[in-house]
Image (cartoon, rainbow, N blue to C red; front, side, top):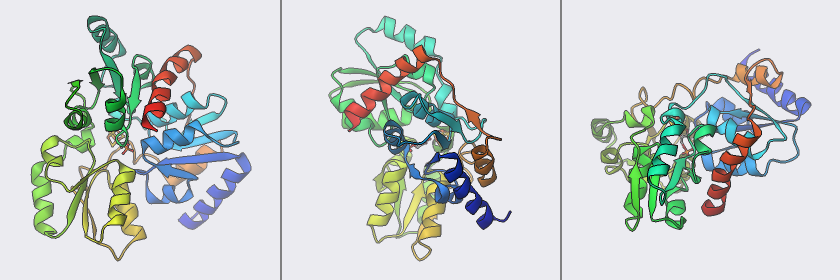
Length: 306
Ligand code: 13P
Ligand code: SF4
């Protein structure tokens, strides 16, 4: 099948199997095209909390996103588009270390980036996403926060909440953390008039040189709200889609080789089709006691994040 035929076959298979397809904004634009709901991690979590009457959900993204859908919609059959698509940040801390930290610091509130395993979420008080982290940390009743695992997002949040003590872990997203100040300087030299939009998973010295900081959906909204050219400092899926949909605009990808997340790019259109037919992907199963513990952190995120 050529691409157009494959897309048509996917739409038909969605219909026939009663499957809702959710896709993160880092997915290939062709996958975004065939998805029912797309967005950043918070948008996908909110969608998962109110999934309409479909039997099956196919999540195109990485494992923690499919786990979040299953945690919030246990009655659905939830399938991850590619068995090996995992976010390396999700397992940068052993759950026992969080338990030990909490025992030694009983007053601390443990706040987990949503890019964490279900086992880690079960040890935490609340989850955050990049678009909700500042709001949620401000609203938490505790003044001492352990923020896991992303040191860059945690450091970014702490600037806006100076009244609280925010203890950082030393985790990071290998894709965003690899961006350097030189990458920004080089891109500015090539496109001197352009604004720069960056994801807060980048290092603080990189973020400091940029004009706009936000989640993937916020970066897309920013790009569409300004007339300027924009250099985009996040995973290339965002820029690929904007360039394709707005060929007349000046959108430029920063450090393309670095900002290609191998896990987000694992899923192909063919995988989506095969997963819809039940021949590919991974069915998510979570033991009920663990699910309920992890759900508390996600429920708190939805409560404090709005
Ligand atoms: P957001 O979707 O919250 O911007 O997060 C980006 C990300 O890296 C997801 O893996
Ligand atoms: Fe994980 Fe970074 Fe890839 Fe997002 S871009 S899935 S945080 S490795």
